[in-house]
Length: 111
Image 1 (cartoon, helix red, strand yellow):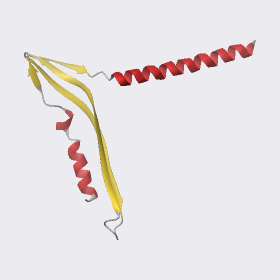
Image 2: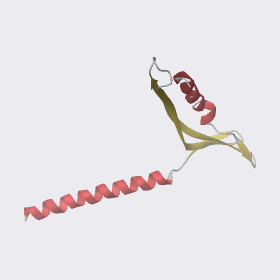
Image 3: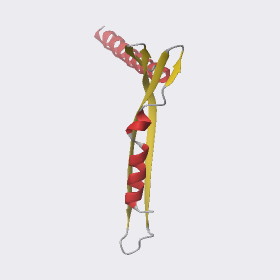
Image 4: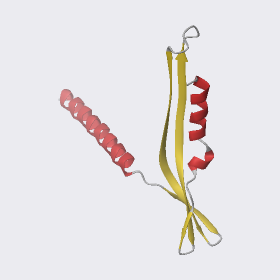
């Protein structure tokens, strides 16, 4: 497979139709899910030996929210990433503990 074929495949996986999911309706409310998609492609080889080389690409996506349509009203409901919230809480707690430790050490050295 040529490098440009892989790049074209990666572009196809990251098109706008993949960002917005299939809308669905229930009880007069239409929901259109949305996701963040990121990716890239690359490869390399030797012109003298076309088979000596490699190509690859990667794509990742995560939900970011959904548009909610009720009659003529449209609202945005962001997705809540509980794992990210927990991780950030842990980071804040670690920084707070390290800061408190440094303050206690500084206070004990003064005495």
